[in-house]
Length: 317
Image 1 (spheres, rainbow, N blue to C red):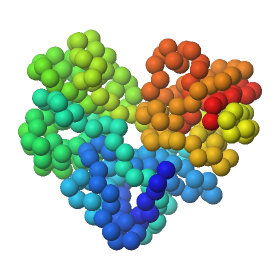
Image 2: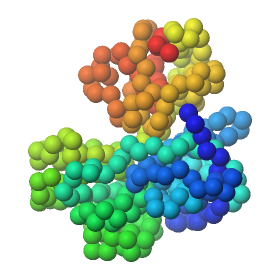
Image 3: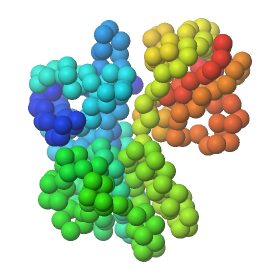
Image 4: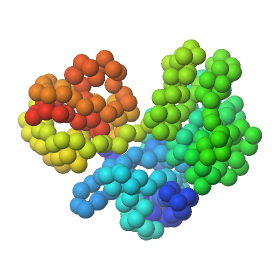
């Protein structure tokens, strides 16, 4: 996959746990164009091993002099967010992928409902720029834990005006998905990004209310989880390797020198999907892409986030 070399031009402490990073091109040229909802994958050298993490672009698609991403510090993470918060400084150089959009606004929608939970607000900042430019009808509904967790609220109010709605849990304000979605006109599309329970609840409400599947959009990047080590045989490459407990299957494949495909590295896009030839145990699925039937069938795996509980799994790569 092609990469861009950028350096950190500015860092802003947005909330106690969220930092915003501004990147500019190392060579001083404009960065590639992107559309609202796009993300990039950052390559971070942590203790000699490359960690690749996806982050939504929050900056304006109308200005590619710089890119902006925000990172919430997750103490229970594998180190990527902690590294960004504690080690990345102004002037640090980072390699990133070209922007990819898996969460774009539908050009056919008559109205758009944007629903964000916590740090899930990030992809909507660039989407709002596109929506304002297209003069398309929309509403933004942003739920967060307490006032100090309401990252970018003032910016959102400035950009959206009366189209923005806020729900602060500590004040007893709850976002009722059924009430919100039941009163929307035909042709409306809904987009949600946030914690998994919130995303699942919104999707369930939309389906219960009879919304067409193509009108329901979500984005949730799943972080790789630790697990028992296991062996992988790449049938086409004739390579055998071990996946340590703290490393994802995709990372182990890359460590072995194999250029495996990916786009999101969060179990959402399907680009890294591999066919399973055999497995002498079970597959532990963590992705949001495969259907329940495909997961039960045991013939496919998303190596970016999923693992196997076995002695050896054989895949076509």
